[in-house]
Figure 1: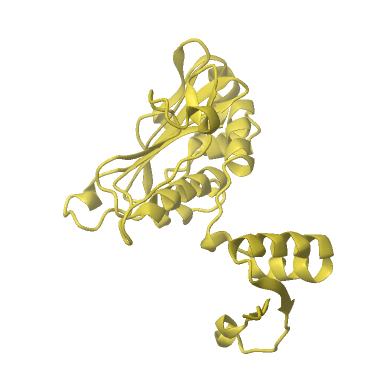
Figure 2: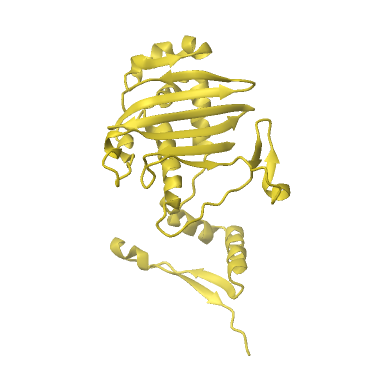
Length: 260
């Protein structure tokens, strides 16, 4: 369960930007868009609004980058290069980019984050809270020797610290070595933090579903009719095209004709 996300010095955001799922104290929409947890009253949904080009989608991009780092940094040394710093301040390139996320797993609140500077991990931290906030580990710089493990993790993961590269997250490394808490957090990023955008769309799979599953097509058609009541049906027309012309492929929409 996502509680909040913050980033700094990433893409169009130089100062810290925060997306919070914590409800305000106002009573408006409280009955249908909030719910109570043991930590706080949370929102079921949020909207990010603003002018075109104002950076709304960059918050989602920042979350996506963080997710990719957690899932892939142990096996992919190049993923850290995708950290895009703010370009309209001469100091930004020499400053760290920060990513932090708050979420709940099994009634435990986790606060996890890291900083990237010059394509290495500058800092990394994990805290958890049931009754009180306590550190799980703190990484002070890119060198693995700076990783300070706490509690049970100290006994379980001390031996694998040396396998952590300067451009990889310790949480990603520990998960690959089957460290329990690291695996739990990595699985949350993989399975619970779902990002749906045009970058993750799969037109080919959508077409396959629609061609082979009549129920799926009926569901899509129902959705289209709610958006435009004139739509009666749609037809998939397979065409052979050169790859560079793939954007020209079309789904034909049949609209109802009304007699006046």
